[in-house]
Length: 142
Image 1 (cartoon, rainbow, N blue to C red):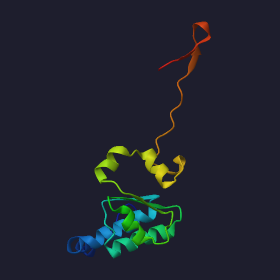
Image 2 (cartoon, rainbow, N blue to C red):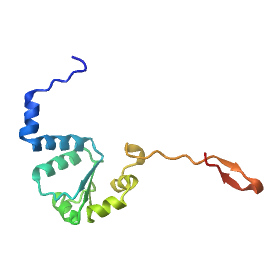
Image 3 (tube, rainbow, N blue to C red):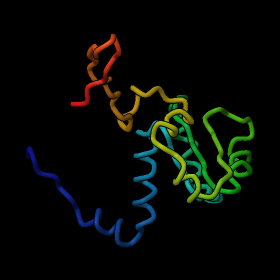
């Protein structure tokens, strides 16, 4: 039937009985779609989550993991001993990182071209210019 979604009692039971399984599924789904996986404050001590992240990175060589925590470098070395360029660590507290980072910087840190991500802000056009008296260029704000 078009426009209708069939939901079984089992779907609700999965969320009710094992909500972590539901969230693991969601993490896998979104990590396979993302260009940047941003992990803030994650210790990388959960093998099942590490497996989901590793699978997503192997699936797309252009995908990048940005790990932010005071011990991110150590965790990344353990997760990626070969030093893959897909793993980037920032050894700063989460609050500092969030205060200082912009979307453009995230894209740059991950090596993503601005036109590749929906988070990019559209380029602003320069305001039209007119000649002022004496040959000066005057920018007109509209």
